[in-house]
Amino acid sequence: MGAPSALPLLLLFAYCWAPGGTNLSQDGYWQEQDLELGTLAPLDEAISSTVWSSSDMLASQDSQPWTSDETVVAGGTVVLKCQVKDHEDSSLQWSNPAQQTLYFGEKRALRDNRIQLVRSTPHELSISISNVALADEGEYTCSIFTMPVRTAKSLVTVLGIPQKPIITGYKSSLREKETTTLNCQSSGSKPAAQLSWRKGEKELHDTPTAKIRPDPPHPREGQKLLLHCEGRGNPIPQQYLWEKEGSVPPLKITQESALIFPFLNKSDSGTYGCTATSNMGSYKAYYTLNVNDPSPVPSSSSTYHAIIGGIVAFIVFLLLILLIFLGHYLIRHKGTYLTHEAKGSDDAPDADTAIINAEGGQSGGDDKKEYFI
Image 1 (cartoon, rainbow, N blue to C red):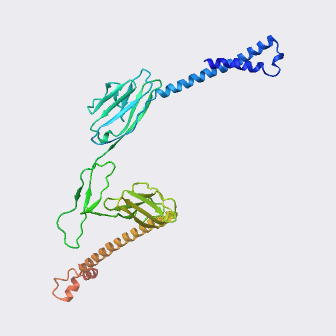
Image 2 (image 1 turned 120 degrees about the vertical axis):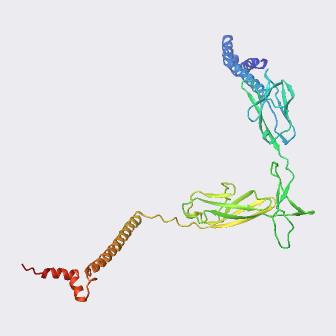
Image 3 (image 1 turned 135 degrees about the vertical axis):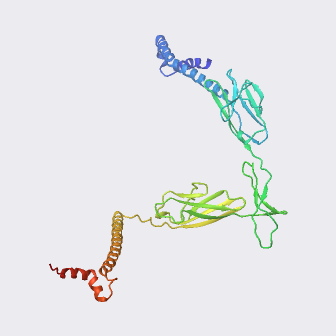
């Protein structure tokens, strides 16, 4: 604080030697001195407050904890170390990715025997996690409960060891010119393991292949279309890059290896290429998309005509049924008429008597009968 207090004296000294300063009276000199002191007093306070603000900022940085990211192989042990310069009479705390407290100072908070205290001081809190699993991967938090609470993050990456590869697909001896497919698989690797084939000491290269399958097979304008890029090989391709001839930049993958057209239009027509890539190489497949016209939608007039045609056909069908029944009825009654017309002639001894005995003859005979009294 000595330096700021000397500023008014230096300014007054400079003022006394300013032009015209020697003509001032004693009273005027002290008036000017009082004026300068009054003006410089707030400046002195501002300088003091600035010094204190800088001190607060440095203190804040000193109470900020720090840590580091760690990488560990599954089954191994990882040590999480958190340090702080100024603890401000507060303890450090470690939390797991699920925000569960592991240790608060020297006190264990989570019952997991894999987690042990390594070192606990006012300026450091270090813990260890043994037999690390893939589920332990994530972001761990070191906190110190000052005002405000300050935290530091530590990202733990767990690497998975690939298991012994297993070969499948071989059943029995092959004859000449026969083919078979051998599959090599390995689990537990993180990141994914790179598999390779060898025949003796010679490494074999199985370059991938790919083909593009449209869904639906015959796309039309206005429909949703998915172009599936189906990669084959050992290992199966994991990277797919879509391109359209005459268009830049490359198209983005929207769903795994598929390219999606939510609403097809004529401008989508063209030749598309899909490059399937594995650690054994790459392969590019092509597909020419021709967007057909939308499916014809029946109009109201055509629907009306179809309904009328159906009604007419039904009426014609009923008429045919009625004609068939009417014809059958007439045929049956015509036979009965012929049968009754000859009724009574079967028992006649001769033709003349039969004619006389017939109903027609009887009716005629009845008309000609005479009665005598």
